[in-house]
Image (cartoon, rainbow, N blue to C red; front, side, top):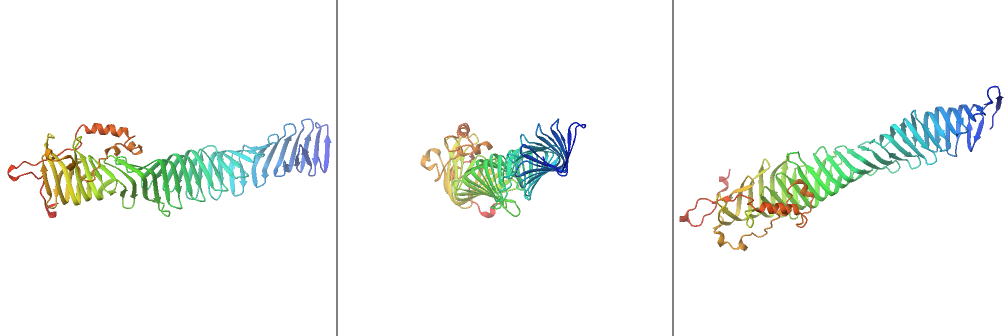
Length: 521
């Protein structure tokens, strides 16, 4: 001990009064103050005015009053308390410092300043040896990038990494984050969020078991049970892995990726190996959706499959590439390229370009077929009502009575025709020019003439319910669809076209006669 003046009084219980800026040393720590009382019997002391404890080369504790117990090595500092450890300052009105564990704490509210990080809380426990701070209750951390509100936070004063140990909200300039476990690195602007993790970025919400975000790169990654919701375009994309690039303007989903579009009555479910959504970086609105490889979609009134698919939100147009196929009711539609025009959750038209083909099953062994260069399907209230066939039109149709008794096989060809559809069944065929061909008795049509060129019945690939878009449809593992196909094959899938009355005097019956364009209303 060193003091300008000492006064000892045995009458007051062996108390010593130290004046004029005394200095004390105890087990490697130095205590400074304006004046102090030393209690020899209890081995304690009270210090007053400009109190300072120097515990190491970097740690200093300041205040206006100090009570120190030499037996327990616990210091209690009050009034304008500041703990300074290199670049970190911890301030409060009452602090406990245990020199046995090197833990400083407050429980009546305080503030931490570390660089441009400013944190307030009701409680704090600072493990000075590990440079770790634990903050509890009404924790608020602010810096130029974020404002963080949480219940429990662990902070490393050296690495400047914050660890979230409870419900946490991070608010940035252009996003909002929530989690119940995670960490944030102020130096690198990288963060991890787990347990009910949520990222809200203007028009989008992203959730997942774990989210990772780089504020500098505006890049996010999500793993397991990932869900992105676009509140403007009314689109939900799910998967088990996702990447989000704000500055590049796109989001990627893979690993059981599914996009859900539309309302509850006409919801479309789209799956592919990879889904990519692009958005305008200025307006932050989703522009396009790409489905790469093994794309399949399901809606109550229409289903489809292809290798790759593109959807434009601007004109509500779906484009399908590489072996596209559409199922509408009991009809299968294929072409080299298929485009579906939608709007207000409704299918309006289907454009089938190059090698267009329509197939519907007649019985377990026979198929009604229409083939042409290009086709356009027209919808009213999401129901297919007519199909225009343009160029090289051909038909193979099984004509039956009302009791399904086969009358004959109609084989015809022409340049243009229109198919009238009702209740998912082709009810009438109209030719715009004079067709060639007739209706023949079934026995007169050999097997090789019953299938048009390019025939391919792909029913086992059809999603029969929304869950089917995620299932393997290679014909080997899609057992459920196969079983349903067997059951469906027991009865005719499509009602046959009714034959007109026979007229023996005019030779073979033609199903319909050619008409002119102006006759079509």
